[in-house]
Image 1 (tube, rainbow, N blue to C red):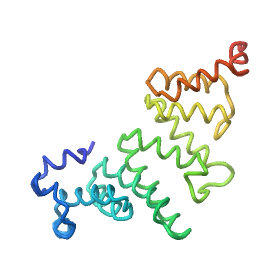
Image 2: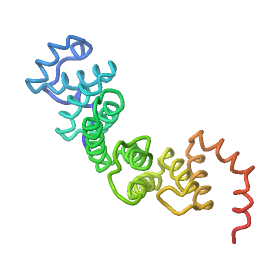
Image 3: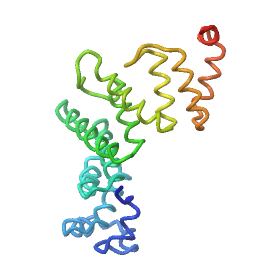
Image 4: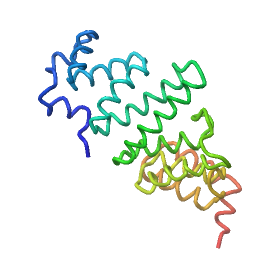
Amino acid sequence: MAESLDDLIGTMAALITESELKANDIDELKAKSAQGNLGATLRLGKIYKEKHNYTEALKYYAILAGKGNTDAMYEAGIAAMSARYNQARSRKDRLYYQQEAIRFLTMAANNGRLDAEFQLGMIYISNEYISERLFPGGENDKKGVEYLLSAARKSYPPAQYYLAQAYGEGVGVRKSIEEEFFWLRCAQINGYKKADERIRQFANSSAANALHNMP
């Protein structure tokens, strides 16, 4: 697996010094980035992310992602989704950034990032997170559940929680009280606080009786 972004700082000879990494001289950093300095590229990505300029952050994280850095793939995906919500001015732009988010998050997921699998699940499963229906006939929801299930099986608590919600509402899967409760318990055991309240609500609902009476 590729190094983390922070590991890049200490391991690659082309990087600028620690003191320079703390600098905020954009023009100087851009010049060094253009010369192939990955430390400057990383710094620019972080600066623009902190400034909420997600289109620029995406540009620099994408460079690092192209070098095989898994963390940068994830950051590029998140920057693209943020750009889609905060900076895209047209339907065409929204679709572009949505596609870029899916592309980079898929790269990160394929390199073992469970949070990327989770984000992909949420992108596909919710109308709120997606500007265009990518597949016909409810296939978006099924695709989202596939990603949530994959991350949930690897004990990623947020995926377990929202997978339970999908089973409870019948989104992308057939409704199942048993599966809903199972994944809620998994999320709770793994420390996901939202699951505590949901299980308390569950215990006081008619669903609890139905679950109790199951053979």
